[in-house]
Each structure stands twice: as C-alpha cells, then as structure tokens.
Amino acid sequence: MLPEVESLLIVQDRDQKIQALRQELARIPRDKAQAEDKLSSDKKAVADAKLAYQENEVATKNVELDIATRRDTIEKLRVQQFETKKNEEFTALGNDVIRYEEMVDTLETTELELMEMADELRATHAKSIEALAETQVLVDKDIVDLEAKGTESTARLDELLAERAELVQKVDDGLVALYDRLLVSKGNDPVAPLKGSQCKGCHMKVTQTTMVNVQSEKAVAQCENCGRILYSA
Image (cartoon, rainbow, N blue to C red; front, side):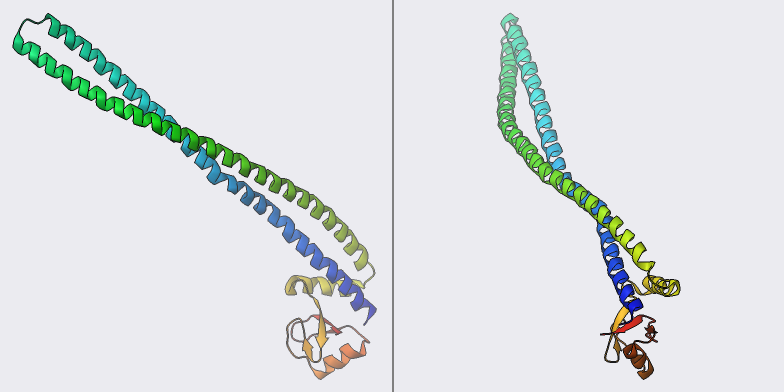
C-alpha cells in the first residue's frame, strides 16, 4: 500500500471517530431533554392529585356552610313555631323544619362521602409525590451521566482533532485537499478498498486500467465512478 494512502486511512479512521463523537455530542442535549420529559407526566399527576384534593376541600367547606345555614334556619323556624298561636301556622312551620332537617341529613351524607373521598385523594396525592421523587432520582442520575459523557466525549474529540491536524501534515497538501473534498461529498469513507474489480465505496466495477493502477501501487488511483481513493484489499 502506498504510504500516502496508508496515512490517509489513518486520517480517515480519526475522521470517522470524530464524526461519531460529534453525533454523540449532538444527541446529548436531546437525551437530556428526553430524560427531563420523564418528569412531565409525574409532575402532572402530582398537580392533578393536588387540585382534586383542594377541590374536595372546597366542596366540603361549602357543604359545611350549607349545613350551618340550614341549622340556623331550623332554629329560627322553631322559635317562630314556639311564638305562633295559630295551629295552621304552627303546622306549616313544623313542616318547614322537617324539610330543612331532611336537607341537613342529605348534606351530612354528602359531607361524609366527601370526607371519605378526601382520605383517598390525600393518599393518591402522597403516592404521586413519592413517584415523582423516585423519577427525579433516576432523571438526576441520567443527567449527571450524560453531562459526564459530554465532558469525556469533548475531551476525546479535542484529542482526535489534534491527532488529525498532526497526521495531515505528513501528507501532500494536494492529496489532503482531494481527501477533504471527498470527505464532504462521499461521507466518512473517501478512501475505499478495491476488492477484485469492485470499489467497496460505491460497489461499482472499475476499469482494467484502474485495477492495474491500484494493484501496482505506483501512484494514487481513484474510482472513475465515485472518485474515491482506492487501495488494494
């Protein structure tokens, strides 16, 4: 293999690793966002549970106020009933008392139901808080791991870029320029093996002349189909 091509293969190896690290670093912010999204449903569950509990408290207080209002009305009706001297009015007031007492009974039943529901809602709220705390621990660990990975990958990327800069200094400028153009147009394999008569970069057959040039290793040869720099596999 030509020394120049061998040097470019080493450069290509570094470029492939550089590209992989850059892709990895680009994924880290997305991975962090996805990790934080795991909290969204748990946070919503906590908020919903808290709201349900608060609404239950408000409903309970409203029922308590309704009960107190109706009991006050009952007391007033009984006073009126005690003061009246008319039988019809006495009876009517008595019926009103019964009606309001039935209202109180219904409201007290509702109050008990709300109180029982409050216990369930309180438990649901507590469980949702526990679940959020557990998820938070996992997410925090994921974030720490991702940040550590980012730091490590950045350091490794800097090392590879320094290595690449040193390696390309040993290769002819014109050949490096050709390689760089192919790197942009062909992706991460501007240097490809020739196996038999097939370029393994584009998987097309090359001419007999190109085969001979590659095998003779007297000069840098390129695939006439894709332009990749070839070496004999």
